[in-house]
Image (cartoon, rainbow, N blue to C red; front, top):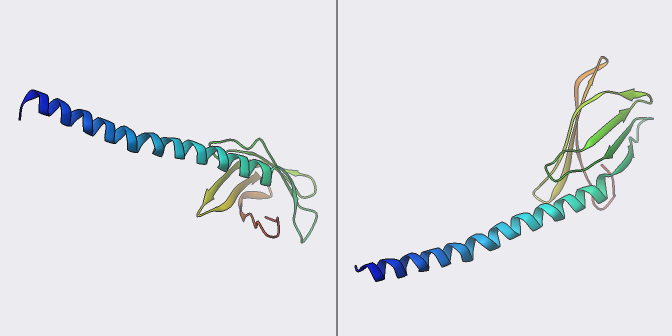
Length: 118
């Protein structure tokens, strides 16, 4: 194989990789923005439990899966960690309580699109 043939083959491989990688990267970033928009639109606000005066208030939804969560029973309970993600087209949240009466209690909630409930 001559130098010219090797160079031509390298260019073809390079163009092929660019043709594959750019759309894949573009799709990844577009999906992240649409996931963030969906999570922010659907989750931001106060969520009241059906069985009592317990409320989770969600705000500051970020692209990296973080969010601010406050829990009230009816007074404030310290939240240690809170996250959201989309898995298999399902919006999920995790809220870990870190309070004297609730050490390590974990809410794992799923957003129901049809009923608009967690």
